[in-house]
Length: 172
Image (cartoon, rainbow, N blue to C red; front, side, top):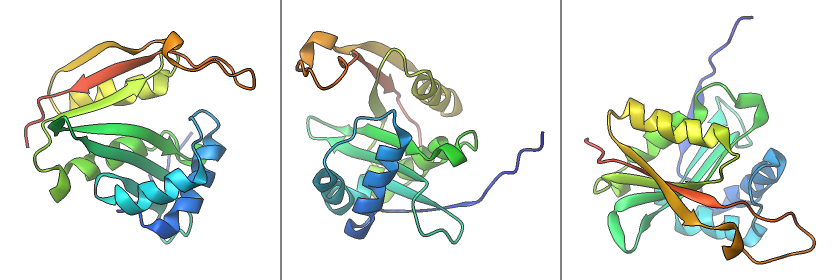
C-alpha cells in the first residue's frame, strides 16, 4: 500500500473557524464535545496558542489543537484538545501542529508541555510520548483527574480518569 504524504496549511484560528472546529470535534466522535460557544471563544481568545490545519487549498479544517499558557506556570503550554479528521490520521498531522505551536512567538517562554489523556486513549498517549522522543526530552505521567472527580450524568457514560502528561524541559 502506498502512503501519500499530504501538505497541510497551518494558521492561528479566527472566530469564523469556530463553527467548523465544533463540527470537526463532533465528527471525531472520541473527544468531549463542548458548546459551540466555547469553540468560538477558543478560536477568538486563545488563537495565539491554538492551531487549525487545512489540506492545501482546503476550506474546512482537518486538524485543530487548542492550548493555553498556564496562568500558574507561564513556562507551560497546556494542550486541551487535539482533533484530526479521520481522513488525515496517520499523516503525522497532530505532531506537525504541536511543532507549529511550539515555534510561535507566544510560546517562546514555553519549556514544558502538558496534556491530560485518558487511560484508553492510546493514540494520544503515543502522540505525547513520541513528541517527547522527537524533542529529545523527558516526560512524566501522573494521576490528575480521577473518575470520581467528574459529575455523574445518567445521559452519558462515566468519564474516564485523565492522566497528566508533562513533557520537558523543551530546549529551543
